[in-house]
Amino acid sequence: MCVFARIFEDQLTANKIKPHLMADLFDIKQAEGDPLKNYLNRFCEVSVRIQQQLNEDMKVDAFVKGLCANPFSESLLRNQAESMVEVRKCASTFIEAEEALRRKRDRRNVHASDIAEPSAKSLYVSWGTKVRTTIRSICRSLR
Picture (cartoon, rainbow, N blue to C red):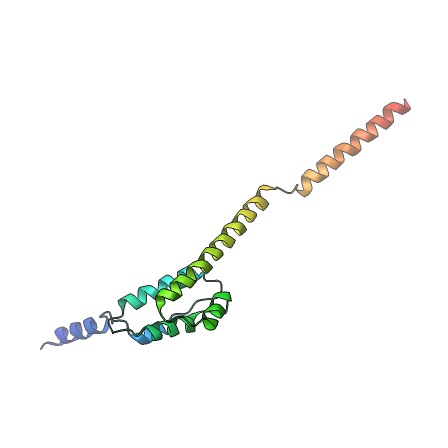
């Protein structure tokens, strides 16, 4: 085998896409502030790609281990889910609540940005105009 063929083959095998393993599920983590929906989608995408036979208990344990501390994770710890179907069912109510809170926060931010605060220059101009008008009226009354 020629040198170039061996180098090409080595490079090809090094860059070959490796199949996901069960241990990869334990590497998926929910970042602080990451919506539950995004974490659940990432977790499900990887679990679908795993070619090994997956044990439901292991999937649930990996999912719970990757959650950051929030009311949903506390709920899962209290009410032990036995399958990912139960986890998804429980997660759907929390996801709806998260999205409703996000929409409410977005609406509040839009309304706050609609209310324009007067700038310092406009306050000075309006105050200066009032002062000049008052001084003129006083001067006219003294004539």
